[in-house]
Length: 67
Image (cartoon, rainbow, N blue to C red):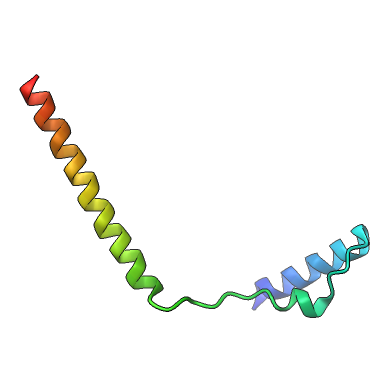
């Protein structure tokens, strides 16, 4: 909740200094909504990244042993 207040006050200050047309109602529209399956996507990326990393390390070690 604190971030929304800080964002609103920051945009209000920007509105005053830069003569932009951002209103406080538009500034309050900036909020964070958690996407569906965000944590699942994160873990899938971690697992897939670990597999790619492991494959790369194994192939590099094999190349080192062969040479």
